Length: 316
Image (cartoon, rainbow, N blue to C red; front, side, top):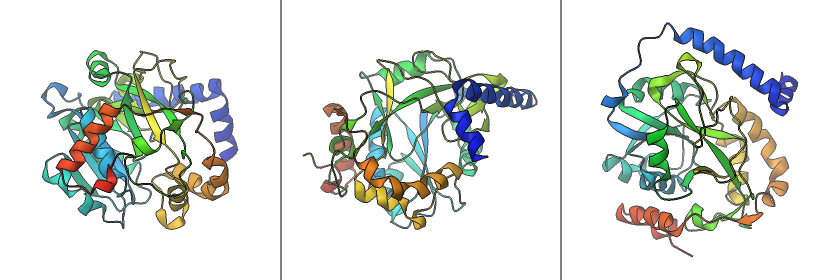
């Protein structure tokens, strides 16, 4: 099975063919679904869903960053955290910006995604599905709102860009988006999506879903996405900064068995982490790629207003 998975990933033609067959099957199944909910009555134009396990050090920044971009509400699925996650994000909960959902199921996905679409999907016109080490960034102010406004597809697929350790052995104080400013020179083929919950049919993986009538996610530039991969644009309207290596300390923390995993692919990845630690430490550090200062300031200002300790956002 693993050999077949590897061949499918390495062959674009085979990967696309398998996806299209699965997509056609889900399109047939979707014909029996009730009519889609009227998205115009949704409470939120843009919400987000995130599943976490022991991400308390990083989650407040993630929440503040995306709220600063225009996310109106975030649903946090807490998969057995033991680091005080619930208490730490309470200032956001008290502001009505976050809903905390304890989620003991292991792995967390796909069950938490299915739950989100059933319970919270009807209240959202769009919903973003990113991880705690993934930060959406705009190539220019307003790019996110403009993309949402003009997109008719069931989902917007955003290419990842991998960021490295920037030489940090231990988790530093301050914002991740400031301290970790080294990245690959270009984006990666992997995508994550901002989807219309009303168009959701079935969970595919954490990168993309199946949609009504077999419709496809598209990039901000309008290119169709067959599954979880699409070649990145030269100058993308949006990018997803994936801080895959937030210091050697954090990388090894997430490799420990007790840290757990959120889906089957996460279990495989976890087993490989320790073996790759030294190699990964030097990867994804090719160019300086800072998040704009104005974005970082918006994040820091919100954290300060909500009473978070300065070491979470202190500038260098």
